[in-house]
Image (cartoon, rainbow, N blue to C red; front, side, top):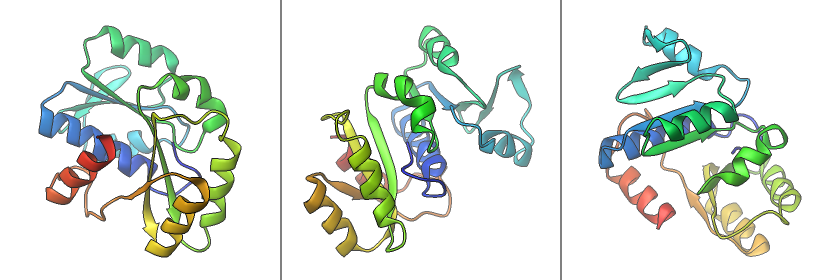
Length: 181
């Protein structure tokens, strides 16, 4: 879940799916439960054919554009070992499905001009947050991240900057090892 648009939520979802599929060889579904249409642009860019009406495969991951709660349940029944859901920044629309997730990753930015939005999202969801909520940020300085951590009493992991969410390197291994422990 992104705290706002353009903070790297889709990139992080693809990175996580690549990690689960590529490192652990898990059958992985990646669902786009937001109206942004990024997955169809990925499909068009890589000229991938749909293996069925609702899905295409890229680099060993099954992508489900414009998915809903129904597709999440169908993926659970199809034997996927990992299901990653990209809710975008659609918290209100995806809230019920999001709260059912085993791990809940919040992606934000600690850049000066976006930090208040991160604070606002955390204050807004404070009553719902639990130990299964994880926090990460692509952009922004260490000082802002530490300020956010102190004030909100949580840990925010820095997402490594990468050229592609499909390439798993040592920084990605360390990031997810630390985040998911």
